[in-house]
Image (cartoon, rainbow, N blue to C red):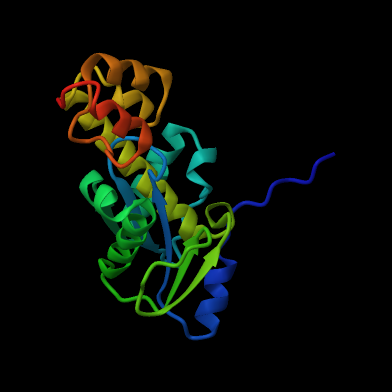
Length: 211
């Protein structure tokens, strides 16, 4: 029988607290891969006595679970969001735009953290100690919380873009390069929310007028 999968816990944050590194922020982002819309970065400092139950990598949760946890996280934790729009992604490349957004999210917290725990293997330029943790959104409670808030926020934003630009299906594919999105591009062309530095969008610019 397979071993039960480990869920995110607060052990790394507790260890940091014992070492005097307070506050501890978990940081994650959503939206590096899509062809449209922003990257959304989030930093979260959880209250040690009010850690929400059920935290996990946002991709492992249902939409209803994410919405419930989003509300609880925002009600009990210090939360900061930052957005890297397509114009920044196209001007600086996706990696640099993502790191910029992560750093902005950390800077927006109400108290400057002493330690930042970052999902992945790339450190943003933050003015404090920071550690990367590959798969951190499935291991560290505060990173999982950041992943949930970033995901819900971006999904809501893409829903709004879908309403503002009917026909593209942003509210369903969230800007990813699905067959529906490809068909919409062929029919409608590129709009201002697309990332023109991404090859599939760049090749469309010469084929159809901008919307």
